[in-house]
Image (cartoon, rainbow, N blue to C red; front, side, top):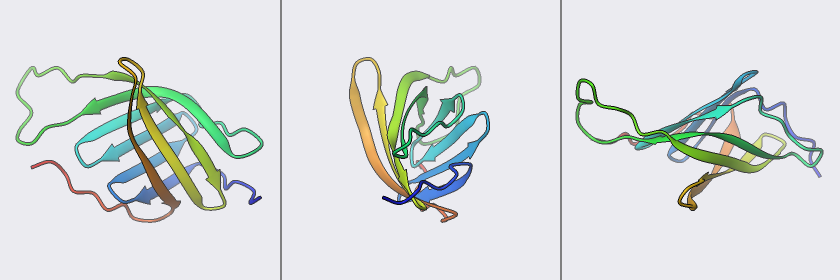
Length: 114
């Protein structure tokens, strides 16, 4: 098995970008964004399961005073070398938003909501 890469840094893939720091992570996707709350910890096999928040976006301007919906989320997957599989799940009601393949130091390909 490949030893996992140090997770901190920028990761990119189709329709997703992830920046990992010592405090957690910031995720940007086509029509949503998320936050990983807490250090990005890997188990000995390079796997992770981390809590956070997911917020859907919409096309057009954000209205003044518009509250952002923050949904409790779980971010799971694994890192092998410079490759990551990232699964995004909403906690309640349980639903999988998607599974994404990312690479370290690769520019993401995002299509933002219009």
